Image 1 (spheres, rainbow, N blue to C red):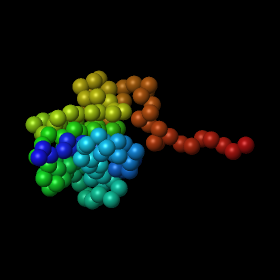
Image 2 (image 1 turned 180 degrees about the horizontal axis):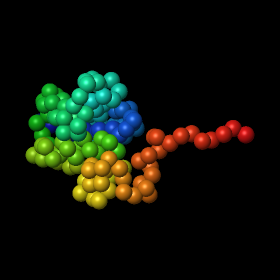
Image 3 (image 1 turned 90 degrees about the horizontal axis):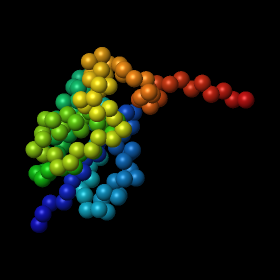
Amino acid sequence: MKAPNTVVLIHGFPETWWQWRHVMPIFANAGFRVIAVDYRGAGNSSKPSGGYDKRTMARDIRSLVDHLGIDNKIHMVGHDLGMKVAFSYAALFPEQIEKLVLVDAIIPGAKHFDDLMTTGKLSNFDLAHFFFHNAKNTLRRL
């Protein structure tokens, strides 16, 4: 019997696996084995003092995939910060990826991505949705 297709869902910041709760049943009903992770330091995952680079976080997910005995290619979906982890996973383990989906993220190779990776800053403030978590609440009650 053929193993089911597996989809691995990697959340964004400051979220957890819970962000996928509405799409998990859709994937499962379509016949996928669904794995929604909390990456290192988020939710109920371990919070070690180091190892928060995206390659190490990708290796964490590879260890999980191996531990679960998944030996067929996987569909990897990364949202927001999880996109960097998913991209690192695909770069490190391309033979294990069937499809790679990057959602709501700056795409590697684009100028904005290169600027962010080299300077830590975005070159275009039209990408304001990447800053909304840091915005002050300036609403006042009347």
